[in-house]
Image (cartoon, rainbow, N blue to C red):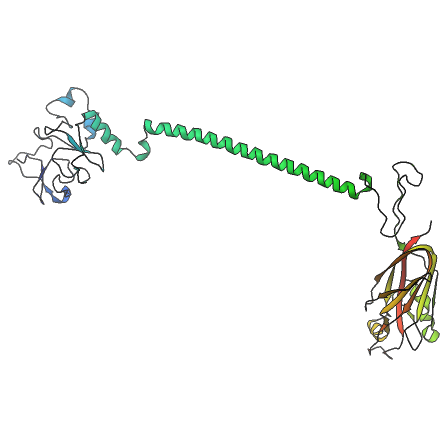
Length: 377
């Protein structure tokens, strides 16, 4: 029998109670397929007929009602226990459905035959509905409180592990820094005589200081000798072009790179220039090649290429000069107590025609000679 206020599904004809959203027989959405049959004329259908149990979410006024009014005949129990037996719990939304339904009244999910549950009390159903209507963040009960506390303990453990790792890293860094500093101090001690290492012979050829210094006092040491330009007192040459004053041998020791000595022989090979200085330990020579009064004169005259250097008449040492008009150093074997250095021409860079009148000239030019050494004490 269809009571006033019930919803009849137009697809299958099943009678549903007020509050159902989906047909209990076919699962059709009742908002589209359900109709309420008309009651006797002039009678407004009661939304809560006394002979039909209300199954569905309670109204707010029903959850708040207390006292005699909530149990009176005018306000029937919104969650009566159905006479048909156990409720059928929906596996999708958890709503309890009346026995005999095939689809959930709330979400339309097909109800399994094995999902029957015992009828819940009005308070239990009201609590379940209220929990379902709460936002997800508020659905935290005692079951989630303990994991939260466990997470807190896990956070403390992770913090302790992080602090331990940081301490380990700092310790390793301190040990490595200490080792590096010790190595650097050891290296400095081996390179610096003041840190306890033995002194070395100066590169310029000076004699090593005695262990006790000049006075023999322990801990004192003489400064290493340093090579300096020696004072050249005299310059002589095998020949001078035209015997001209401006090309004499002394022009190679006057400190002016724009003047030069020029040999005057028809054959440059074997021509020489010799300089004299106080007795010293010779260590090297600094030579400026060519005639540098101008670029045209430099290219228009011959320049020294291969030479032989003899110190105090000793065995000559072969060296090769670059074709440049700037000073270049020539290393020679150190000789103690020397007073003379002789430079002999072996080959030349030939002069070429330039804008200077008369070029190329048949003369080899050498602009400057500097003898480096350590004077005798």
